[in-house]
Image (cartoon, rainbow, N blue to C red):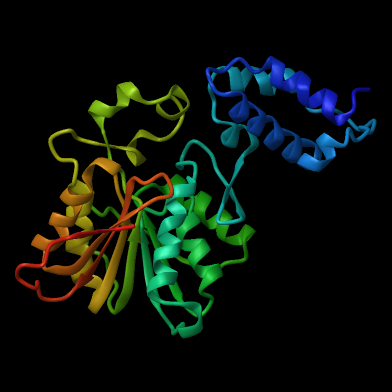
Length: 295
């Protein structure tokens, strides 16, 4: 039987994706950890493999070569150091979305934590809401989604991570949200325009839920307008909105919140230097204040 390093090399060689060698190796490390419990150290030290039943590597590699996301194949993805169940009813959590968690903690440091009330709009897998529940255990966390299937996945993830979150089925585009006194609204809404679809990889466009990804070309801020409206209904005075954005639309999203009466609007960049998060405070608009970009 092959040792861990030999198996690693064999799987790498079988993956036929137009990706870098580093990306393919990362996929194989994920496979070996998930299927056999092997760490990178185990691979590098050529750990001997036991005689337990081997996974169906041919089927797994075949699915990868059809560009199915490895997270869907494995049924889980990492977010903020925790594992979340994922399936085609929810988006795969991305590292850049972790910036929303960082922004909440920046605004309300753990050392100053109070009994915050936070609502996550369009929760999907629940990764944002559940992570906030774990990082800010005194907070009251609500999470909404229009998709019943997504909410079922989010509920499972809350149980898996032993997190207390109140889930609500809600359509942000048409329904009122029956909450009051919220301190923070967070959201990673759909923000990819349909025109951008042709330049995206098939592992996204062919597998991830389009309703969680795309917005009309002629109305790219549709969800931000709805979030700004709902925010005015549910936030306490001085409450905050923190949303993930399309890197192309930092100033456009900022203008949505300014026009709706928010102020202290900031655009924050991700580690790649791209506009990624907009935050805004609910209060009377201060005339002449313009949105800012921060490092």
